[in-house]
Structures are given as structure tokens and as C-alpha cells.
Length: 186
Length: 186
DNA sequence: AAACGCATGTAAGCAGTTACATGATTAG
DNA sequence: CTAATCATGTAACTGCTTACATGCGTTT
Image (cartoon, rainbow over all chains, first blue to last red; front, top):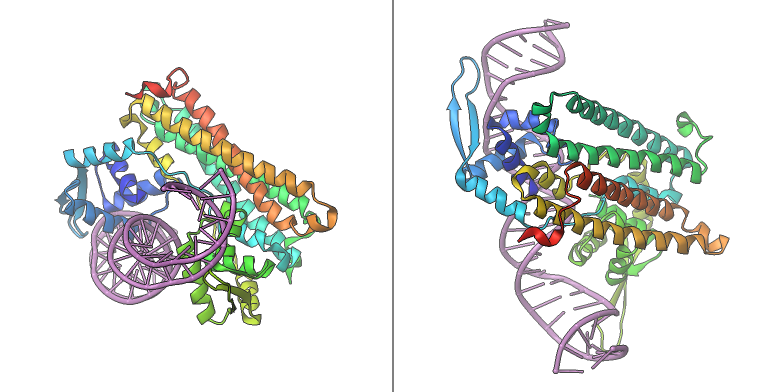
């Protein structure tokens, strides 16, 4: 049930509409906690009904009204209460590992191709994380100070992607997939 | 929907009862895909109804009958079909990161304590992974060969835990929490 | 003319969690 | 006497996904 709290945390930084939250999600909390737009809207409704956020409609010409949400005092209390709890300790939970676990049933070329695909994705993600990290590092001190905590989550993202990349390389080596070209699959 | 496939993969290695699968889960796939016993039993029923597994009851005196499940030919086909699909690319999704993201609302000592707790858990998990890895490495070649694929998943576990530990240290340093003792929280 | 960005949702369904439930045997 | 191990489940609920739905304005 962290989506609720992720939203509270985002609204604590700055009020915004469902649409705003969705875009901001994509470039911050979304790196380590995915949310679909439907889920965000649904959660906002629930939060509104629970009195943790309040909503003001901004009418616009030609577009649907923007519903701007903001934390209430009760919302801040709820966020702090959640923050005071011990966060659960989680494990990886990635379907690729289930596949590798059963890897002996798979043609080596298929496994090699799959690992290459994932490696490419992790490399891409790593690159965007590093860009963002550099961007924050380049900010003037005052503004940079606002991002010290979010930046740490970005750093975990970097460690995480590096771990996957290191593993991919090791895996290709240890399973003897290095000489197999992805296109050999057929 | 990987639990279903994780179970198929485990049954492919060796048939077993729901109870067996639960224990084997804990010391293999469970490292990167958690399952509650209820969920395993439920999934086995679904698998049975779908004809992907078959079940033989072993009556025992004084204990409930062991229901031993085994893959059917159709089950093997389903497993192979799933293995042939591209595995989804997932991100971290860890509540601790949501907490750190909103870290400025938290007393530093509380954050320090939380990070220390997680560090300890990751260290413990890392130690068990390394033990298992060493155990596999110590096996005679014939038996070791059976574990080449599962061992790779264990290796990812090791990389993953190391990433968290490296991050924890960095985080404590960058947020200036090094001098704060966990007990200061009160 | 098509695609993309803005802006909001509903409905159905599934995977997974939490709580509840039973009961014998064995080890400390 | 208590706890753990063996062995199986049901029921209620929640969080999340997937598919469906609408409609204007701007860029290509």
C-alpha cells in the first residue's frame, strides 16, 4: 500500500492534478514504484474521501477541468505516521529470474537473446538515472538542497541497474553464451 | 502471474506436495519470488483444474494425506510456452525508497535507525546466499551441473544485496547520518 | 490525416495478503 | 508444557492490471 504514500509524498513536495502526478511519477518516484494513471486517479479519489487531500477545480477553456489536489493537515499527519513505521524488507521478485531458474529447458540462443534484451534496457535506464543525477549535481546549492533525499533514491536506482548489468555479464560468461549471437535463435 | 510459472518450474525439477513446494520455495525461487503457503495451495488447485499438473494422494497415518503434484505433458508445454515469451522488465518497487524520498519529514535518527535495520537484513540475506553459493561450488561436478541455472539466480541475489549494502553506506555518508546513533531516536 | 499531449475517468478481473481454521507428532 | 514440524485449506479483502471510454488542441 505504498502507492498511497508515494502520492502523499509527492503532494507534500508540491500540489498537483492527477495528470501532474502521473508525469511527476514518471520522472521521480516512478523509478522505483510504478503507477498507472488509472491507479493514481483512483487513489486520489480514495484519499479525498478519507480527507487526506483536498481538491480545487481549475476550469480551462477547451480542456477538461484540472483538479488540483493538496495535502490537508490530516494528510500530513498520515504521511508522518506512515514514515514512522518500519518499512517492510522486500526481495527482488523478477520474472526473468524465474526464467533463468528454469533455463535448462530453454534453447541457449533464446536465453542469450533474452539476456541481451534485458541488458540493453538496464543500460538505458542506467543512462537516464546518471543524467538526472548529473543534472541535480549541476544545480546551484540552494536548489540542489531540495533534492538531497530524492537524489538518494536515484542513487539506489544506479546501484540497482549496475547490479543487473554486472550479473548479465557474469551470466553470459558462466553459462557459455558469449559466442552465441542473438540472431541465431531461429 | 509468475507464481504459476515458478511452481511449474519447481515441479519440473522434481514432483512434490504443496508443503514440499513451500519449503523448496523458501530456499530457492523464494529468494527472488515470495509466495505464501495459501497462495501456493490455491495455485496448485488452479493448475490441477487447468490440467497442467496431476495429483496423487499419499495416505499417511496420523497426518493429513500428502498430495503429490507432478507436471503433465500439457504442463510442460505451458512452461515452455511461457519461457519462450519475453520476460517483462521490472523496476525496484521498494517502500523504503518511498520513505527516503520523503526523508526530509523524518527525524534524522529515525532514518538512521531504519537504514541500519535494513542494512542488517541485507547483510544477513547476503550471508545465506553466499553460503548456498559456496555449498553448490563444493558439490561434485555431476551434481553441481544440476544447479548451474538456479545458481545464476543466486548470483543475482548476491549482486542485489551488495547493491543495497553499498547504497546504505553511501546514504548514511551523504545524508550525514554517520554520527547519529540509532538509540538517539527517542 | 494522423499522431501526440492534455485531462479525466469506469468496469472487470486477477494476483496476492491477512486472518482464520484444524489437528496429530515430535523435540526441547 | 510449549513450540515447532508436518499437512492442509477457506474467506474476505485489497491493490493493481487490462481493457474500454471520451474529447479538444496542436504539431507533423
